[in-house]
Structures are given as structure tokens and as C-alpha cells.
Image (cartoon, rainbow, N blue to C red; front, side):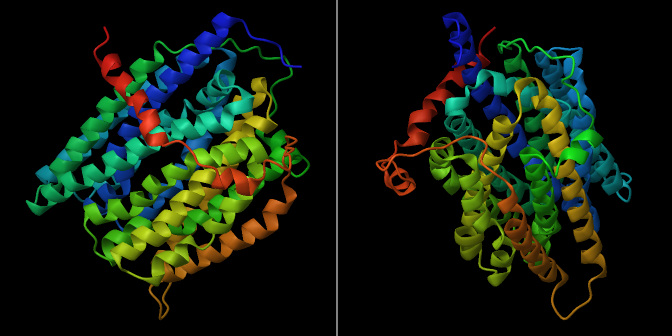
Length: 458
């Protein structure tokens, strides 16, 4: 039987959850202005297709590798301190990226700027990922298990809405500056806004409540110990499955920007609308994904969403019509990945105890990152050396789709739902889906109103 929490602790957790949503909105704004435009920026400074693919490859390995080491910081420092320090360094890392755009605009050392950006991109990744394990552990302690799916869907809903709207609006700004042949000025403005937004999210953490964590003496286990037992535990099998899915996804995912911006020659506006319009649609069903996960288990959500993930690359090459790309692959892909990522995150919480959560998630991300690194790396090699009658990117998309299907069919049956989900005859999955839900975006927009008050707080 679960121990009843003290009312003061419950109230602190409630406020912490609200602040986490506020922080997430500003972090999302930073992503919309910055990270969403890393690949377009690399293309704009004349990076090769292989180097653009390398961004995903480096991201896949360097981020999780950083978390592998930062996960042990919890032993000596509070999670709040770890997260705030890491985010502050991330804010500073925007400066050299902005300088890269300024140098290209001035025509200074333009031939080596793609490599310089790759270096600064890596440093940005290291700082951003250092906070990962501590943040994941921290959130697990302020969000109770019984409504974890609904709460994270609520947070993801608001953050995703902010990312989608701001990223699309930013594309109009970029297209305007590109039209007047000042594209780099547009990138400088966006990256500056990304830095400011992340700084505000750093400030929010200052007043965030952090429950104390007690680490048992035997809590630590090495990455190699995790690997050796991975085929025998439910979480280990899930991590292996996720790594292979990341591998098959990254082969094509690293080249979507190249396909849309170079092969189809779309504008920044069209590119961003295609890649994010589906996200806006998926937000309307995100709360439903959370309810299904809470009622019927995260495993069922992963199964359902996975069936729509594998054909996404092929859907992209059926037609070059922007309307088709917006309505079919974008909507299907975003909706499927929204459900899968929500369920996958909650699945980790279900399978790992609180004191081992930061460590376990870093190992999970490490395997996931290796898969992304190898997949994106393979994509970079294939785009350079494939010479067939078919456009190389189309061939790569077909390969990615086939490997996704194989991973899902072979991997998912080995994973089990850890929580016992029992449903009565009156509450079926069909009834839950057909049940009328509240207009979440309108209801949750009240959270946005609190931002204005926060910004002007002393």
C-alpha cells in the first residue's frame, strides 16, 4: 500500500509540476528557434550531404555518451544543481554558433565553417545532454505513477504546440531574409532568440522544488553489467529494441532535410510546415495517447504506434506535392512518434526504481545513441556511394522502411508490460477512443497565461 504524502510535500510537488511546464515552454521555444534549424543552417553554409547526415550521427553518439558520465554526478551533487549548471553552459554554447553565422555572412573563412559548426554543434550537445539523467530522475519523483501518462502528455502537448507554432513562424522570417539575400541575418536572429529562451528556462529551475533522493550503496551498476544482463531483463530487451529502431530510423531521418531542401528545392517555410504540421495535429491526440497508456499500459501504445512508424520513409517518396507531404507522411509520422515516445518514456519509469533511474536511463540512451550514430553514419555513407538508376535518397528511404518493419516484427514480441492493466467490460479501448474529450489546447492555454507573470517577477 502506498504511503500517504504529507500535504506540504504534495503542494510542493504540485507547484513543481506547474513550473516544469513553464520551463518546458521556454525550452521548447529554444528548440523551435535553434535546434530545429541546425540542418537547414548546415545546408545554408554549404555543408555537404554527408556532413548534414553526420549531424544526426554525432547527436546520436555524443549526447548519450555524455549522459553515461553525467549520470554519476547525482552521487555528489543535487539534481537541481546539475541541471541548472548544464543548462547555463548550454546557453553559452549558442555564442560560437552565432559567431559562425556572422563569419559566413561576412565571407570570412567560409571554406572551414561547416567543420567549425560541426565542432560547436558537438559542444552544444555535450552541455545539453549533461542534464539528461538528473532531469529524468527529478521528474520521476515529482510526477506520481498513477497519472504519469496524462501529465507527460499534458506537458508534451503544450511544449509541442509552442515548438510547432514558433518554428513555422520562424520559417517565414528565414524566407524573408533569404529573399533579400540576407539568410544569415535570419539565422543570427533565430539563434539569438534560442539563447534567450533557454536562459529564461534556466531561471525557472531556480525556484523548482527538488525532492531528496536516497541512493543505496549498491545502487550503481556498470554499463557493461547492464549489457551483459540486457537480454534477460524486460528493460534490457526494450533498450535493445529501441536501439535497433533508432538505427533503422536514423538511416533516413538524417536526410529528410536534404531531401526537402535540396532534392525538392522547397523554401524554409514549406520545409518547416511539412515537418511540423503533423506535430500540430498529433497534439490533439496526445492526451488520448496518455489516457490509453494509463488505462491499458504503455506496451499497447508502443505496439499501435509502431505499426505506423515503419512506412513513413516510403510515404515521403510517393509524391512531391507539398499538400500530400503535409497531410500524409507528416501527420502519420508525427502522431505515431508522439504516442511511441510518450509510452517509451513512461515505460522506463515503470521498469526502473527511483534510485537507479538516472543511471539506467543514461545506459538506455547510450544504446539508443549508438543505434542513431550507426544509422545516420550508414546514411551518410550510402548517400555518397550509392549509384543506381534510382535517386540515392529514395533508395535509402526504402532501406530504412524495411529495417523499421523488421525491427518491430522481431523485437516487440520480446517486451512485456510491467504493470498489471486490468480493464472492466464497461471500459474498453474502443470506448476510451470514442469518448468525447475536453478541448485540451483551450483548457491548457491557461498555463501560458502564467508565463507573463513569471517574466516580470523579480
